[in-house]
Length: 382
Image 1 (cartoon, rainbow, N blue to C red):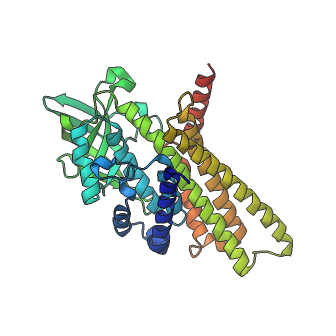
Image 2 (cartoon, rainbow, N blue to C red):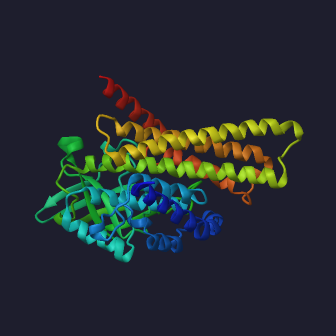
Image 3 (tube, rainbow, N blue to C red):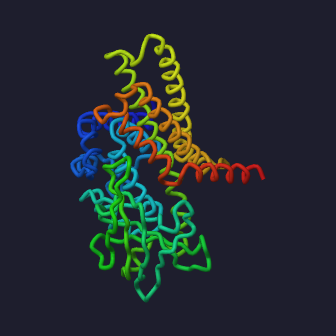
């Protein structure tokens, strides 16, 4: 086992230990109350899960995409809400890490490491959901600062973050090249939190509107040059979508293992004639999970190895799309196998099925992921 593999296994061991000790006992309560798990966030900070991609020069872990996926998978096995906390924070952090604004890195990354500051990624808008290029939030340059105006919606970690990574239009005539990224600190005048969403699943993840009304942001808090926002977004999402796939993968694993334990300990629901049908369903579930695993970690490996000549965006989209569909099918079958018991909250598969539905929709619906795959495929064959 080489050094990289040892580091990855180290992350798996740590994430599994934290998941079993801290996350698992709280999973049902987090869903029932729909409250952000501050206690778990604190443990994640202590464990290095919130600084995975921060370079060592800023005190971070300097981990790779594969390690990121491993941590997410192990935690989502027990609680998707808790695992999404890490993803949403990391997605907000990633443009800053990838950008060229060194002063901004010093300000934000040091606080994440030292104070466990949280971030969120503010892209989606009421009129621009899956079509990120259609955002309307504006950033107007006025001397040494910008004025930001707009409304973001369905922002994960909204209302609990210390820093908001906001994408806005700086030049409407340039479309993609007219989008820029900014970091807005909590408490900045004009930044407010709107409606908090009550979701059917992943209820322990805070999801809100973020409202910007004449928010004054210094030029020094722009992430890199004007007009590079779109490319920072795409580079970020290429890294986060395999992690979303890992989120779905861990969820599916948890559902399958729960059903197997239930059947072995309490017997399979239904008569003896149903046992073979259940076994076939379990086999299909296991096969689909392993197929999803292969695709998720292939996409992650491509990002880590900076594969040239390979459309990493396509594999990133594939991993999110396929794994989340697998999670939906596996959790639905888990509920079906348990029968009426699968419908009650005393069994986690009820929560798992609701969580799986959300994963199919957020961070680019699965229909959008298929469009990305098709576009990339046709482009690569042109």
